[in-house]
Length: 150
Image (cartoon, rainbow, N blue to C red; front, side, top):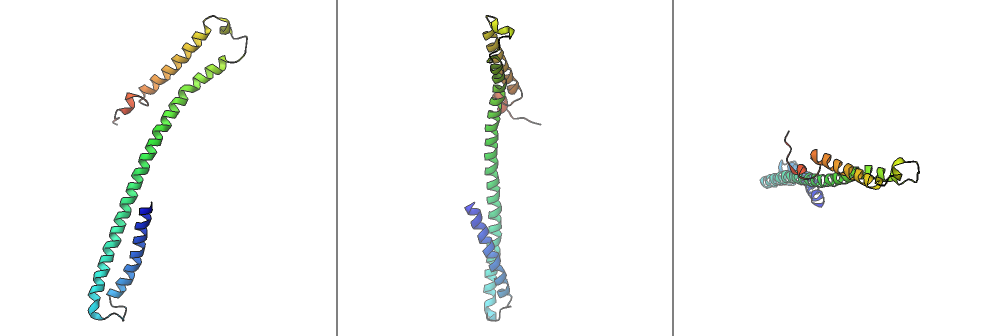
């Protein structure tokens, strides 16, 4: 950003100087002798080049900044995707654990000897099923590294 500000400052200053040297090179200022006008035209040409270069550098810096911000945004999107997948898997497991963690006596499966293992098995099946679904859609694992062609 500091480099961009410097280039913009250079362009602003050179644009103002260009106007003055243009008037000087055309002989509008009578204090400048006629034989010196070609030198002022030369300075004016150099200022035009400096202004064009400053404009080109400004475009290059803007493009580099946009590319950097795009990379940062893509990295953040990947992190958000991982967090979303983790949350989506944990949500139904939390619901099941919360439902069976209540102190109700009239849930029929609470008095069954294998209900603990059935609930744990259900939670594993839900988690594995969601992981498989996400993998199949290409959101995680080896499928997400493949290039998807339209």
